[in-house]
Length: 337
Image (cartoon, rainbow, N blue to C red; front, side, top):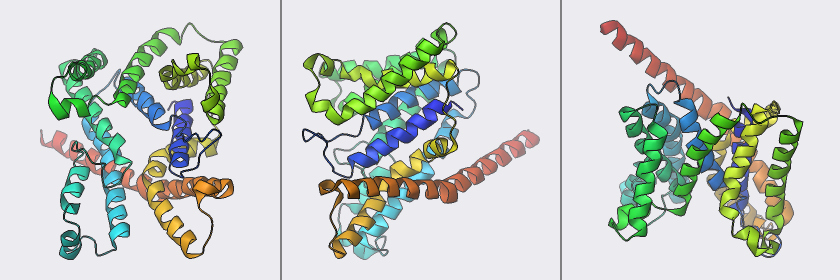
């Protein structure tokens, strides 16, 4: 495990959870602290990292990691939003697009509408990235990252020149570039990690990470020359975390690592938790997060605790069971062969 990246995942998930509180920082600035961008850079890097020596069962492992929890989260959201009888014919007749929206969401199909569980829009791009990377692995494990990057960038170029229609345009979203940044970062880190190190590098890496997240609180006041290069900040932060760890400065504090382990559950569950919590707050005539800093802090902390609980009680046992089932089927197939 790369501990620093795992902790960074937790920070990114907290950033997204903060964004969905609706609270604005100084200068009326509404931010997710680049949480989604950091997620995508990490994803691009990790896919290269975990397949550098062995890519067996890549797509199966990725789908098991992502899909079951997303399906559970989507169905839970639908049930809570429309009532626990939402999967009945009455609910579908009252919401004529619900069946199609649910179908599109569960199968990660591109659509002009957001998925039923809104945060699923990023997972549509994740699945796209996994599929392209999986095909690239089938062609060549060694050169899979480069093949994948070439395909993704070709799609972006086609859209930029007006070719391909909706599908090409959908998969040319600005955030797709962060997958490419993660792939590039893998090669930079793989080549440079053995040459770059020492206390000065570690100090610079942590200083840049702290400055990046801290500066988000005053981003409207950034000079234009910094804003012009803002695209590079998420890859820079991920790179700093990587080089800090390869220099011997890893964050292994258990609560921080646990938050990172729970980042996917937090990411999926916080919109559902916010819906329940805000309905309760409205009934009790309490202030809402977007207007009160204390309520905002409460929402983010509570969402993190809920995410950790879901990870420990649902996600982790579910993944363990699915992995055991998959391993059992592989052993049975090997014995039969």
